[in-house]
Length: 516
Image 1: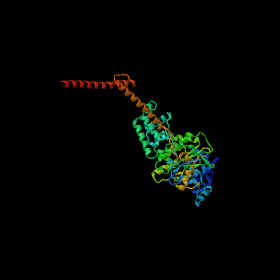
Image 2: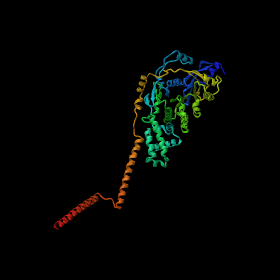
Image 3: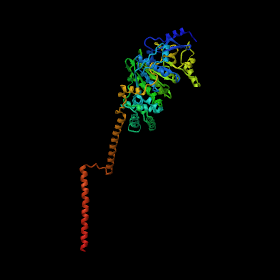
Image 4: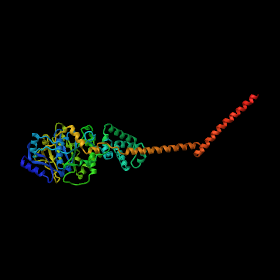
């Protein structure tokens, strides 16, 4: 291994001195020592080439997310981050100076200066921030099928239902809309309507999908669907020249990983659909950090994986960079991993055979280094250190460097509850999103259709009944009101006449027998 410090500094400088704006990740480590002059920088224009932040639990991944987000905010780049434990709200408060932070800052050549950053707090439940919702139609059949755990056949049926709703302009806003439409098309009058163009929906398939929707509702997950739906353009904001850091706090729904991971992908899908093509920018319009990324890929169907791959491949042309954060690079499928040009790998452990296998696979994803044995470095990195390789401003992978990372400048932990709630209430988005809106949607339209259908059906039944009565009366034409009244009067006179004649006859007979 090469151990010459001057050669190391020269190699790092040639790899990590991009033209234009950049952020500093840290300083290189050689022979166990921090080399301050070997600065590891990442060009802003390369951040829409996506990235990976990986490492075992407790190795400092969250702080790496924080230090990158801070520097992006300073550069005027908005950031979206998943706050898994609710401890990133400290970004709103300047950190507290201490000897360890001062020493770290000096070691990497970036003096530690506490700073705060503009943040927005969001929540899927609405309890820990401004509510984030999405319409069922925007979520789409593929992502919804993942939440509902549908098989391929059921997913195909769901896709047909979405296509019908789109073709007939039926707004699918929440799960109630979907349930009403599913019943209408499987058992209601819509069954005949869709048979030719969309295919018949069997009652068993419809029943299974309905049961799974109900199960999701019982788990309390239905609240993410509705209006007012979140506008992803609201993630792209600046305050006083700093990019706003939007945090989605999921600490109250951590037990629903399928929900929040799929919801994050839906936000990316909306960004992809909404934002215009911009090509290569000097800096990204937004950087999206996808924490707990392994949850996104567990048990993913082919259709779901295809959607992920398409979004990651094409969204960079919309000026959006995506960084996946997980424990090991092996958590990310190769088709996606190959599109992540920037790599920050924290320490890996090799305690078990599976750990050793993951280490071996991870080492194979790195280029050769003249300064390190990659496998040894990955198991010996300390907290706040990482093995880094990124794309330089020409799109070429840089030298692999073990790096001592820049310290985060804001509070590394949650702010007090009272301050947290104050931040939430001060947000301009509370008025826009917090209250749920109940607008006319597919459920109401289908109910109106059903009422019209039932009224028409009742009229047809009445006409059939009238026709049956007419046939039983000899096929005569239906009487007019005048004819009916005349006939009724005649029948009444006949009855009264019969009674009179009966009385008259009785009187005559009684008189005859009395004379005898």
